[in-house]
Image (cartoon, rainbow, N blue to C red; front, side, top):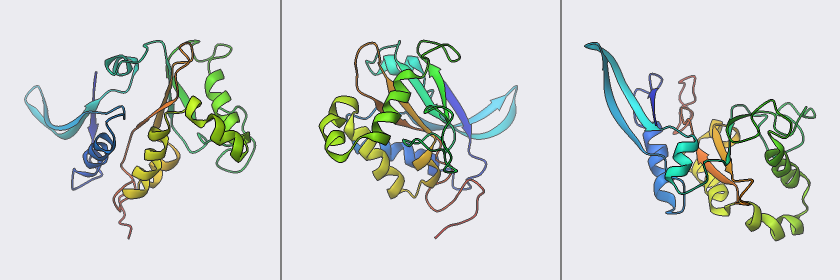
Length: 198
């Protein structure tokens, strides 16, 4: 249910929490991710200050009224884009490159495990402007995806523009794709390597 994230790379201890709080307040229709801070001890030994957040999984989807059987994908690298090419400009082995499947059926490794995601990527990559406009609101929760770009632009979340995202889809129920953010250690003027950026 909960994730403890070490923010050792952020002396302010605020960037991750502020990013999630901003997402949660941008729209009442977003799937919110609850966050707080906690001082952690184990067997009486101080371990530090951690960010406590909701665990993005099928239980969280159910908590927000979505189907437990929906597919949940995590974008773990910059190949997780909406193009037919990977981040290096080469053709992808599969259109689901860059994603892990965290929940849903078929299980990873089984035929069709990523079929709905591959269909989404193919549609975005191949649709012309008129076709995209005609179908976008039947395929996506548009506010989620538009606000994703607003958020990462606002907070200079460069790493979160191309990965560090969850996509949820209730393929069996015909629901629209949803977005949830994750991992903002490159934001507010500091990349994950901790240098400062203007």
